[in-house]
Amino acid sequence: MNKQPCRAWLPFLAEDVPPQCDAPVKVAEFELKTGCAALGVSAPELRLDHAMGDGYAVAVEDGKTVITGGDAGALYGAYAWLMAMAVGEAAPEGEQNPFYGLRMLNAWDNADGTIERGYSGRSLWFEGGRLSWDGARLRQLARMLASVGLNVLCVNNVNVKGEAAQLIEDELPELARLAAVFRPFGVRLMVSIDFSRPLVHGVGTADPLDEGVRRWWQERAEAVWRAIPDLAGFLVKADSEHRPGPFTYGRSHADGANMLARAIAPHGGILVWRAFVYNCQQDWRDQKTDRPMAAYETYAPLDGQFDDNVILQVKHGPFDFQVREPVSPTLYAMPNTRLAMEVQLAQEYTGHQIDLYAMNPLWRELADELPPGGVAAVAAVGNLGRDDNYTGHPFAAVNLYGFGRYAWNPFVEPENVIRRWARLTYRLPDTQEDALVHLLLSSREIYEKYTAPLGLCWMVRPGLHYGPNPSGYEYDAWGTYHRADRNGVGIDRTSEGTGYAAQYPPRERERYEALETCPDRLKLFFHRLPYDYRMSDGRTLIQRIYDDHFEGCAEAERMAETLRTLDLPEPERSEAFRRMELQLANAREWRDVINTFFHRLSGVGDEKGRKIYD
Ligand code: GCU
Image 1 (spheres, helix red, strand yellow):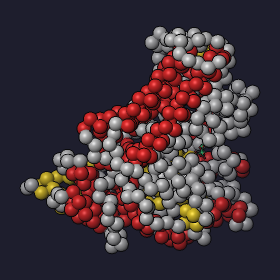
Image 2 (cartoon, protein in one colour):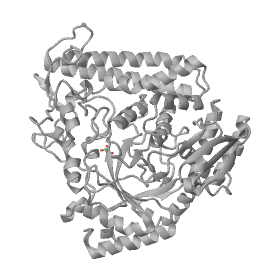
Image 3 (tube, helix red, strand yellow):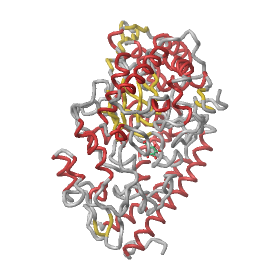
């Protein structure tokens, strides 16, 4: 068990769930019993109505609270009710149903115990090439996931390396045991698979149209679902960043996905196929290829060709979880395909769980932009690890909590989510709680200001993805260019330029193409602009870049002051302070490097005479 008590948003995690809690409804009964005792409130009645599925209803009948729900729904209802009690609110009366049926967490854990883009320690369930876990800890985690309605956990990295391929082979019995840990909490497992696996087993090819390949996957699926009948499905990263895929055999991604989907369909499995496909060996001299266009070019022509149990998982932006990107045009382009939108809780480009970066404001913006009914599911790359508090920075838990809330209702107000998390996690006096909520609510905007400006992206240190290096990705093979020179910066992605904007439906296309309507925060994503271009508030582009960097850094310094006023418990207090010092150093480095970079190029000074290094 972890050394420090976990101060998660569930205030009644102290007692471990006993083994007889082998189904969500039994867990719900246990949580209500122990939770009510801890909170000093009388327990509500729990009624099971299978037809309600993940939904639940809370009603007060003759002064008594009744929670009715489907199997997992009853559990979600119990948690919702308990959390309302914990913050002293009235019973959340009425019926609740999740907006998205599939609410997935994708762990990027490797079999050797490392985590790709993991900032919270080693894996909670892999070590030395095998599955290995602390049962009490995983039950605690499962309770946290269930408390915010997350219902699928993909346990291994999309880049299936080393022994991870054994999960559906020799390691299957252990995977079945792991599934049994999460099952009572309504969380089903998923596995990332290696598309080329038949090759290792002497099939001679991994061509999706080959009969031998089809048979191999059918037989594998039979064995897998025999061991784990409720496995949610397979997740696949194919033809991306050197992963194998159908392109090797001249087949389309519909051919590849459908072959696997048909192997698992008889068992009720879903096949989640990632749309993160682009040329990662581009020549920077090539000005025609524009990386953000790649996913749309690959997938939009395939709309309607995927089987019903295929879900195409698309990153929220056309690049790769940058601080500011427009919504991916692929999410508008495939009305006849089941789509999942992928977000990233792991703060790869957003501060490594050192810098504060609460994500609900971003997700709310996405919800407002997405076409109605366009997306059927949501997935998040996880931010979990073996650290005592699971998420490295104690406040990074707000993103795990917030993702569950977002997946349940994407239109939930970010401020309400953050406040609820803060109140459940820490009992602070009102003014301090307000300060913490404000700190988190403004954290993304502040991070955006001191890092890459106005939708430019990719000014981070290559590989590491923390700290500034404005030209680090400029002459590289990743398709990540800003082409800053003495005259201006940015890539023209309008019809005059690469034509990327034309991948959007007319309304979005027109908005982004016209300089007057393209939002300032995305101007350099869509346009190449001279430094003296006047932004919508009359400032020049270069002045706006300087202002944002000076202001963002000053705001980070104010965040540090606010943090010092909070009476947080230990060890969170020391840990949050320690990380804040690192954040400040990072913010200062970004400010000075980016300002100097643009000052050297443009030769234009800061109107306000602030210090820019030569
Ligand atoms: C990014 C990230 C990789 C990851 C990839 C993916 O490129 O840096 O670590 O493998 O995204 O989403 O597949």
